Length: 251
Figure 1 (cartoon, rainbow, N blue to C red):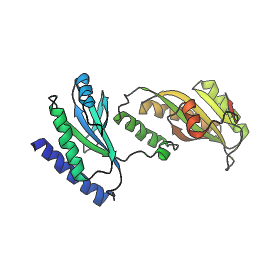
Figure 2 (cartoon, rainbow, N blue to C red):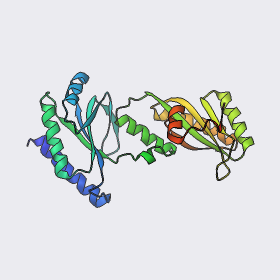
Figure 3 (spheres, one colour):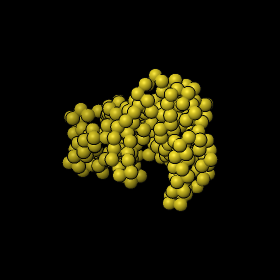
Figure 4 (cartoon, rainbow, N blue to C red):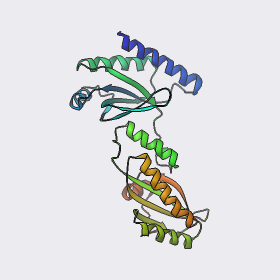
C-alpha cells in the first residue's frame, strides 16, 4: 500500500470513529460515499468513469467547492466523482479506496478525496424548505455536479389568511411579472389560502436570497408570508403533489 492510500485508510478509521462516537451513527445505515479524482482534462476523467466498476455511479464536475477545517471555501476542479450509496464497513471503504486509486493510476491520476453524506430521503427531498435549507440543497446540487448559475426552477409557497388577501397578493405579485402564479381559492385545514409562485431561477444562493427577500416584502405588505421553497417547475410539482388544476386559478 502506498503512502497516499495509508493516509486515506487512517482518515477512514478516524471518520468512522467520529461518526459512531460523536454522531451516533449506526453502522447498518447507508451513506453516500463519494470518491474523487481530479484532473484538468475533462475527457480523461470521462474515460476513467467509463472504466469504473458497475457498483459505482459517476459524474464529472467541472468545478468543485472545497471547504477546509476552518470553513474557508475555495473552488477547484474538474473532478470525477464516483459514488456508492450503501452501508459499508471501514474495511469495505478502504477496499474502495484501493480499487479506485488503482483505476486512477492506470490513467496517470490518483484518488484525491473521500467524503460521505447522509443520503437524501425522497419524502424529505420533496418537503417544503426554509431559505437556509434551500441553500443547503443548492450546495448538494453543486456537489453532485450541477454548475453554478445553471438553470433551476424556483417554487415559492405562500399563505394568506383570507381569500381577499390572497387575491390582493396575487395582483401585487402578478404586477411584478416574477413568474407564473397558481392561487387556490379553498382554504386548508387551518384556514390558510395557498399560492404557488413558479420562477425560472438558477443554481445561485445569492440570487435565491434576493428573490426570497423581494417576494417576502411584497407578501408582508399584503398580510401574507412565504412558508416554503422547492426546486420544481409546474409539471414536476403536479407530478409530485398531484394535479390540482381543477382547484387552482392560474394567473
